[in-house]
Image 1 (tube, rainbow, N blue to C red):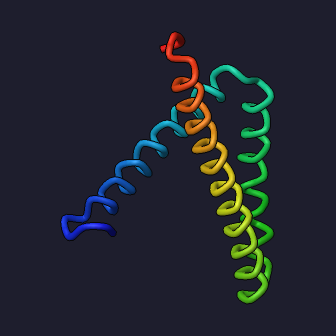
Image 2 (cartoon, rainbow, N blue to C red; image 1 turned 90 degrees about the vertical axis):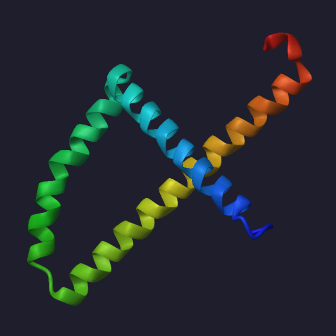
Length: 103
């Protein structure tokens, strides 16, 4: 935080909220327009139930290990998506600065 009013923290919270909204919109649009992505999401949903059945048969320790691994993979994926999105936004701003006629 740079100031006592929480300006940096407020900005981060607003930016994170905006980023979440934009990625949710992109996801919905992708589901609507990309049959391959929609098929992958359906396959993932189909495997969710099977995964739950498999996890129930594991020991508590093994189940926790698998769940922790999945959580880490999902966090890595989310981090990469956020990085890619932010890099794209920065590149877009740089392009607009370089080519103001495109505004």
